[in-house]
Each structure stands twice: as C-alpha cells, then as structure tokens.
Image: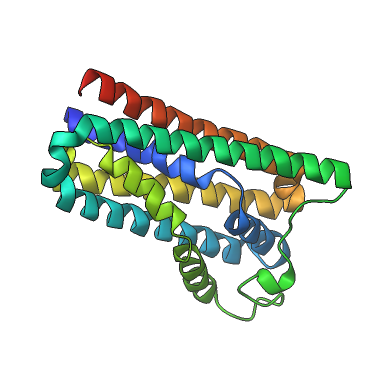
Length: 228
C-alpha cells in the first residue's frame, strides 16, 4: 500500500469515527429502535446513517478534487485553517456536552431521549427494515454539518492526494468506521436499552468523539507546519 493510500485510510477511519461517536439524535434513534422495536430495525437504521456519512464523504472528496488545482498554492494556509475549524468544532461539541450534562444533573432530568413519534417505524415493527434504512438515510442527509466536516478534512489534504484511488479509499474507510460504530450502537441498544443514551453515556461518547476530532486537527496542523 502506498503512502498516499495509507494516509487516506487512516484519515478516513479517524474522520468516520470522529463524526459518528458523539451521541446525537440519530444515535438515540438507533438505540431506541433496537431496544423498543427490534435489532433488525436498529441495524437498518445504523447502516442508513453510515451510508449518509459515506455519501457526505464522497461529495466532499469529489468537490475537493475539483478544487485541488485551484487551491494548491494555498495548501499550508488551508491546512492551518482546516485545523482551526476542527478545533472549534471539537471545543464546541465538548462544551455543549458538558453544559447539557450539567443541566441534566442540576435539573434532575434524564436527558434528551427519542420519543415514539421520533422513530421512523411504528412500535409494532410492521414496516420492513428497508423503510427504516431509507428513512434514516434521508434524516441524516438533512444535516449539512457533516458535509462541512468532511469538506474541511478534504480541503486539508495535500494536492498530491486528490487522485481517485486514495480519495475512494478515504470514503470507504469513513463509511466502514461509521458503520462499525453505528452497528455497535444498535447492538448496545438491544442489550442495554437507554443506558448508552443516558447522561453519562452521552457525555463519555461526546468527549471521546471530540477527542478524535482534535487528533485530526493536530494531524492537519502538523502537515501545514512540515509541508507534507
């Protein structure tokens, strides 16, 4: 495996886990489907979210490849800017998670939990898992922040990394990372129910996920400084 392919693989895996790990609305829905409907529906939802993440990564890679020749003289500046944006995203996510955790503890509430009407299938599970899959793809695609996130990472790549092979490897790795994490959520939902989406679980996954985003920021900053 070439150096460019290895870098794309590692970056894709980190990017996929970084965007997938913080527990948000989609994660709550996956756990809720697994615990209240069936594991099949939870798994279908997990794969739907992962596919949407992969599509966002593909869109970012295609757009980045189109802009690569234009922005190549500004590579170091853009890498530094991308690292700064990722730091802001990570800090914002961490602060939001801490504030939410503190609010829950002070208020004594159980945190944001998906209700029955939030789940894209009825409680009796009449609709097939394919409908759940399609519904989760659509819901996830409504969130443009993910596209911005992957776009920042792609812009931060060096001009020589815009070939089709490494770009597709980045997309595949991001999809696999997201799918593996979302599948873990579905499995945990079937076993643990709401425990993973409780205050402590949400805080822990938010801290870990935003920590991965900070690692990506440091990686881009290092590339900007060394010119690699």
